[in-house]
Amino acid sequence: MSRRLVDFAAVSASDLNWLDEDPEAEATWSWHSHGYLYTSYLRIAPSMRCWRTVVGGDDRITFEWEHQPDPEGVIEFASSRRGQVSVPTAEFLAALAEFDRALLTAMTQRIRELEGAGPLVGIALDLDQVRHEHQDREEWLRRALDHDPAKDWNAVRAGASRIR
Image 1 (spheres, helix red, strand yellow):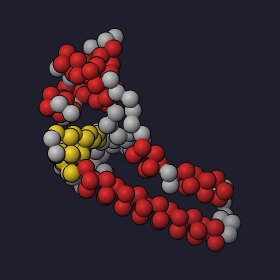
Image 2 (cartoon, helix red, strand yellow; image 1 turned 90 degrees about the vertical axis):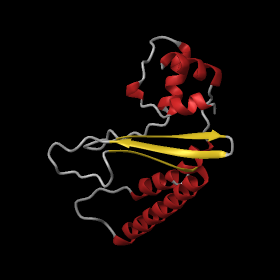
Image 3 (cartoon, helix red, strand yellow; image 1 turned 90 degrees about the horizontal axis):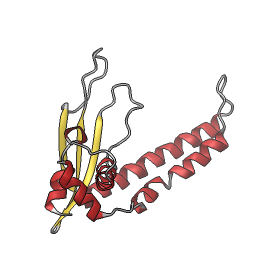
Image 4 (cartoon, helix red, strand yellow; image 1 turned 180 degrees about the horizontal axis):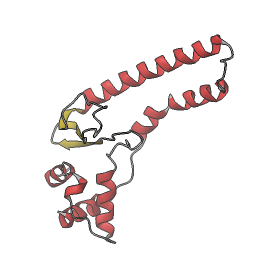
């Protein structure tokens, strides 16, 4: 990744001047926005995004967040209001795989507990569907890591130079 794109990746989307109906700017927007995590299902949704940079032999994942305080003061965040952390990609992927295994193991255990509990009073639960969804989730990380969206890097670079 060129140094200019590394610098561009670190800029928040709200700080950029996006161009309408420009194919190269659209390619840049698509690439830049791909790293935002969907959080709008949360009551006080933080903005979170990550991106990977490879410059020379330095391969890193950068994670950035920002959240607004809860106006009712009920929800407290464990971190600072804004922040950014960068870690070697290999460490990030190892931690991600460890978390994925631990979460799926815990979910498997809970499904087994539900299967052994018998019918739950007042709760309609389709255990066959729960098992099916869980089996599908067991493939999510592999599919996500295998996914490489096509990028026209020349268009992304050209759009980035005009947007800033």
